[in-house]
Length: 91
Image (tube, rainbow, N blue to C red):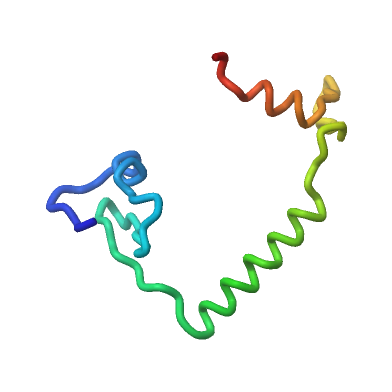
């Protein structure tokens, strides 16, 4: 992917970004910039943050039978399955 002479929108960037690219890219003020792979200390910190977030998400993930209560009136009681089903578009 090369930087174009005209500015790129976020939607264009997402549509054109190669999903399985070996190289990473970033959209900076409408220009696609090739990003180097993290090295050394940066790579270690990124790995630590990734691992910590993964463990936290695993510990707090919701199950299908969990009830989520809203903090607003009227109080709603929905299961995780109901929330995800509500977000799906009809087929």
